[in-house]
Length: 270
Ligand code: PGA
Image 1: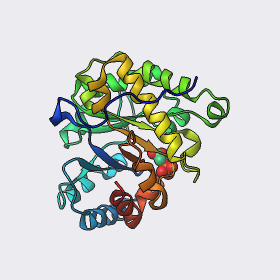
Image 2 (image 1 turned 180 degrees about the horizontal axis):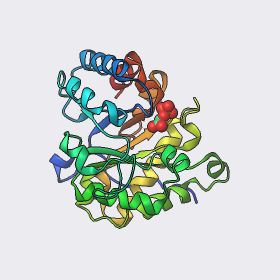
Image 3 (image 1 turned 60 degrees about the vertical axis):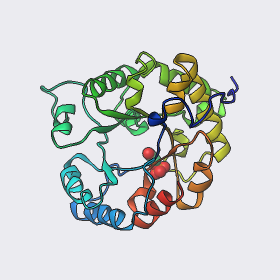
Image 4 (image 1 turned 120 degrees about the vertical axis):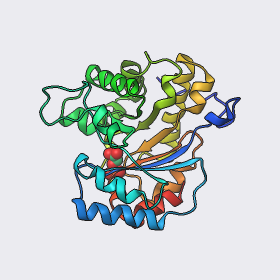
């Protein structure tokens, strides 16, 4: 199915205080030890440009480094810290896992869920992700929900269907208010860590499709206020053009978020 153009009114609506924000989030994945990650967060804090209140900067270190990064990010309150994952249960016999309550106890209120690497290597399916989303929302945590099609889906022309399915499986049972705590991250799997980026036009086409879907399932206010990030080989060289698209509200950045200069350059592109 072809992607419809977005009918929503973009950033202006009656709920001015609920206008969607621009977000640049760094997903550090399983990279950087304590020392290296402190150097990175300090570099980001020191180099951060003056930002409008409508822009957020988030970094997501591995669990073990979160407290150090939390402390360091106090140097610049504009750098927020998120977790890369969490478990769906409150507590219990789940060796190696981390619960929502534990994250909140150290001041973490945002979590990335549904990343394609979790789906692929840790076999996280729609059922499991739905439980994780529900657990996070029950704790009033904010979710950066990742989804996106694989190369074969794009080549086969099924990318809109796949994205619709991923969203409806895990999110479309939520109510309007829940959506205040959802950030979407469209990450075509074929563009993650490959150097292959979706063109700004491909990103815009999919983001408009997503916003339109949300409008159909909810209404234009919910659709207008959700931030939709693009992720997949965003670099200083392509960030500005991708971010210039009307339905692209920022990016979830992997590789380029590990280098202070690159991440700052991407923030400067928003
Ligand atoms: P990348 O990763 O920027 O290295 O492609 C993005 C992501 O996986 O979130």
